[in-house]
Image 1 (spheres, rainbow, N blue to C red):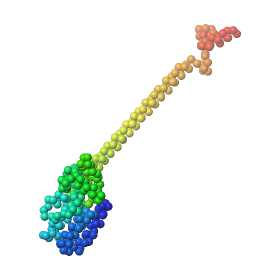
Image 2 (cartoon, one colour):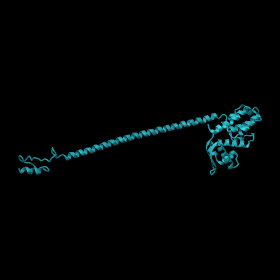
Image 3 (cartoon, rainbow, N blue to C red):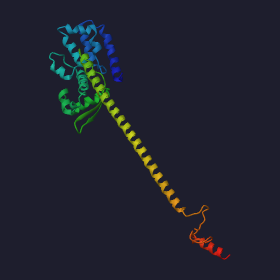
Length: 277
């Protein structure tokens, strides 16, 4: 639970206990005034549900005080101004209702201009608006920065201090269900994209494997071709050599016995030596 929310609940607890002894309408009205004026009370739903406070709703004389407490609980400054016959607010009550209204306005960034906030909160000047925002920041109601150049309020976080109005739970459930369906739709699209990415990766891997296999076959063919060329060259180089690798000579079948045809390469020296015998 948010620290500011816990502080607000603790501050309200004493007023809830006091409501048990506020058996007269006048005592209940005084308790409402004190609760809405106290510095740390920003939630009022539990006080609204106490029997002695709820009894004011059916009182012709004091029903307006119960309506005022409802506005502090989930209404806005505009609701107060639009509702007739409500009690006059004290300065502390006006400050608090404006702060609570500011929390409600923070849900839409388009409403956070100085001009719009001053008009909505009935503030006379930009300085009074800045004082209200600064007091809200120090109270822990929101985290924001004042952009005086652009005349805007940049809000980064808001404390969950507004009560839910009656019959708002079904609408809230509907909003959550719509959000859930959109999340499911987005997750489905993401899963489809993941499947597509994996499929492309698999196809790329297969293509790379085919390319690699084709490259290996090509390299093997080139190696075989190179080996075949070397073998042919060796066979050509050894074609005239004798069985021992020496130069031989041919016998001329037309000559007589013991006559030889010219020697191969170094055979001429051998023939001269033989004739000298």
